[in-house]
Length: 104
Image (cartoon, rainbow, N blue to C red):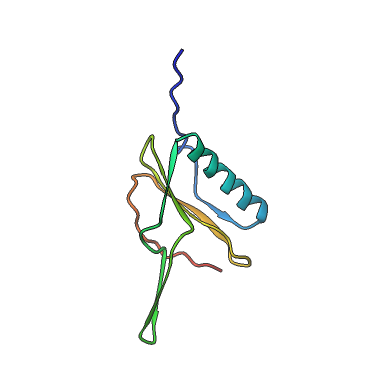
């Protein structure tokens, strides 16, 4: 019998990370997916938030991007920096579109 690894990206949803427990669960999930070669880790290439003012520009990048090797879905993960929450966002078509996310 041949086992074919598949993803469950269609069933998974975006979440906010508001507790240490949630953070550990998210981190463990993505680490396991990489280990199983279902996801690969990518360095975030675009900021999720851009602030401009007083002739200055500040960009915030997510902690990690993960790409599903089965369906191409892109997952953006930003670890919490309490009291600021973290988040997991999903781009089903694999194309990153910046939507400004409030940190607080």
